[in-house]
Amino acid sequence: MTSITVIGTGNMGAAIAAIAAKGGDVVQVIARDAAKANELAQQIGGTSSTFGDALTGDIVILALPYPALDDVVSTYGAQLNGKTVVDLTNPVDFATFDGLTVPADSSAAAELQGKLPGAAVLKAFNTNFASTLATGSIGDVPTTVVVAGDDEAAKAVFARVLTEAGLAVADAGSLKRARELEALGFLQMVLAVREQIGWTGGFAVRS
Image (cartoon, rainbow, N blue to C red; front, side, top):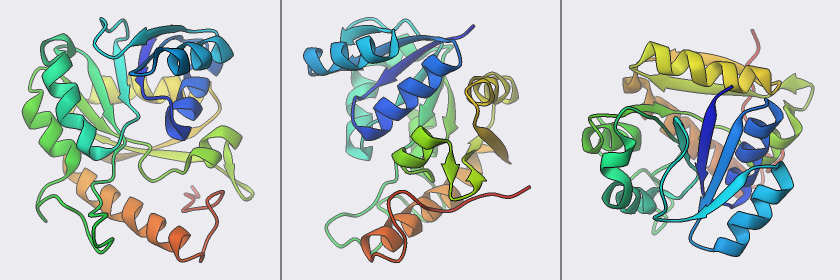
């Protein structure tokens, strides 16, 4: 059994918290809105806390928009030492919706790792829509969570959490691959906004 903290109660946060609970893990839900955190925690049988309260999870999943990452670092920096931190953001330039805001040779996850040297940062979930995580499938293909990170032990534990909840996992290698994952996540969003695919669809991985 693994202890997991999910920061964020939006569609992704709710889907991921439910996945963790389904796998039998202990889940803490954190949000600025205490009522929303408590509501989600009750739905999945977890506990709730307000943003700024102590973290209880060994794995901390940041189900937040990219601009909120700096706030997480300033609030929880020291507490995240020794923990696995999962970044699911896509650093999209929403002013133009025509690219990413991070340098071409970097990624949101790489930036986060640089600010949290004592944590094991993983990139995951950013190529999944919330609905496909909740249903566990994309059409007739099982939902696959693609993960990138430098800490092999952290990836192994995280992968176990997902597979025990019924999802498939693909290891993309080192954290350097987060750049490609973020580009893929952005492309998937573009296709959905242009109504080329639905928000219940997206990219699938076949073995």
